[in-house]
Length: 204
Image (cartoon, rainbow, N blue to C red):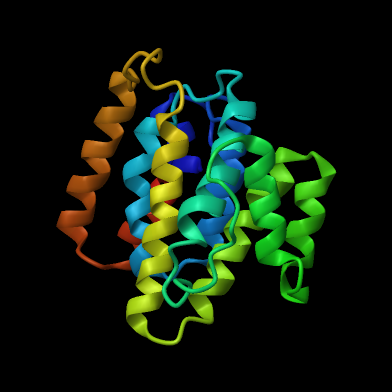
């Protein structure tokens, strides 16, 4: 999340003030489990995360539960015959659907605890871990890619909450100048260690 802080003009931080705590928790957790090639796709979300600390995390938590129940798990490869017979609307029914998915699987115990605790950030963290476990345990590369794409799709939808009321992020001019300078330095020095160190600031 240091890139978000950088673009927002904040001091270097892994917990930028501008970011939704729930988005931050989900994004950091999924980032920590993604392979490097997929992780690079998260950088594109940095400008969209600016300004999401807007008091709408309760709505984002409801959306996250809905996405898990109705899309990520219900539509996962190999799950066509396992969909629970629960209507697809309503927060309580979404919770019932999630409980149905996880109730008989000890691997999902931590997620069950997070769901029942009422702690939305814990739920977001365990949701990311759950998707990551599914990706790591995928039967083939295609299924694994499906789960990583699903995780990125979830982050995309979480960032959409409140977007219609947020102003486009104004990235400070001095930060843009720093980005340009770092890019030029990286091109000049190629892959030498000094260039990579200078670019550490741009890490997700």
